Amino acid sequence: MSNFFKGTILLAATAFISECIEFLINLTITKELGEYGVGQYMTIIPLIGLVMIIASMELPISISKFIAEKEELYHLTMLKYAMKLTIIFISILLTVSILIFMIFPIFSEIHPLIRWVILLLVPIVSISSIARGYFVGIQKMGQVAVSNLLKRSTQLFILVFIYQMFDFQLEVAILIALFSLIGGELLVFIYLISAYVLQLRYLKNRPAVNIPKSQLAKSLMEVSVPTTAMRIFHSLTHAIQPFLIKYTLVAAGLSMGEATENFGLISGVAMTIGFFPAFIAHSLMTVLIPNVSQAFASHNHEQLLQLLKRVILLTSLYGIPVTIGFYNFADELTGIFVNSATASYFFQLMLPYFFLHYYTIPFQAFLIGMNLVKDAFLHNIWTTIISFLMIYFLGSNEHFVMDGIIVGMNMGAVLLMLLHYFTICKKIGISPLSLRKGEMFIPH
Image 1: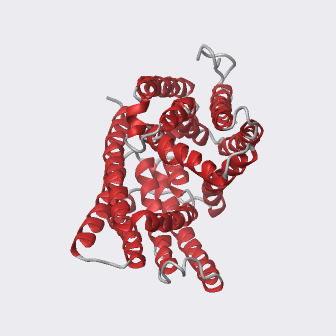
Image 2: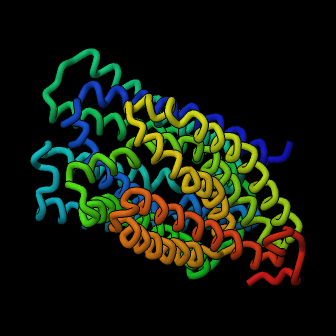
Image 3: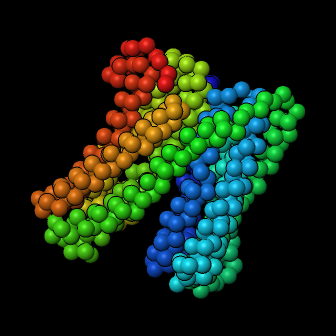
């Protein structure tokens, strides 16, 4: 069995277990904090997600790409440079964050310590990102899989143990929930760095070649900067989307209460169910980046074509049956969350949105591996603009309302998947319809 399939199966299996643990974590937090407390907790999570995106600088992607493309001779030089760059970045980010938190009392109404607790994530996430990127690059997916399990398992253990042992006021209980998240990240940090130090000792005893700092910076930044920008763009659009949908529904004649309920059905029910199988797509993405990078750097057209065929086959093998199952058991699945025929109808209408994203996620790995990160970013920008326009124009029409909003979302998913796919086919010189060689493969 190839490293591609081994890595995919390993990551997918551990990701499934992690998703199950995540469900138990959410259940524990919901029972402990209650509806109001969960609302408060969920207002903090987006900021934490943004901090983690910025702190990581998408180093796992840029480092794994470099490691996969280059021989072992060049690895040590890159890793040393990445660590120096990360330490400088951590210092700058912490300084800026402290100044912001001193000027703006963010989350002080929940608990004054929360904003300072969040800062603990910056060095933890930044430094562990180097180790994670290195292990993905050398395709040691075991370390990545174990780290994913450790994070969720530690978080669940801390939550269950502390909540069972003690009773807290709501604001302290929220703080404990955040500490459990940081505790999971800290244990992952210790595990990855320990394994990473052993690898560094091995590399120091091997022949090494120095690379100019300008070349190292270019290799990292040309991937990290656009990928980080794309992740931040996703975070911002996901933050804007709820307000857009609610405003559109009110414009169509619904009350704000009805608009909020309808949005809750698609975000809290439909998306929770529909994106559950996406852990397979994310596992494929992690494994694909080093494999595609290596094949593209060596101009191996045939390997790129085989990887693309495997991705389409694997995604179809789980995506098609899952989508059919979702359609046939929509009532039972949505009934776990709410007893509403409307939720089932919305879920069925959104199935193309979920199904197409199962393909889009690994396709994005191809674009990153073939130095087309900017193309991926532009695809996301254009499809988001078109999708948001269609959501408003269709959703604000009283004849469509929620149907129009979901059609607008589906349209964006179709465009994004097609843009990614046709760009990949063009880059490796194959026909999008037959997946056969067309023009000669010319790397850019």
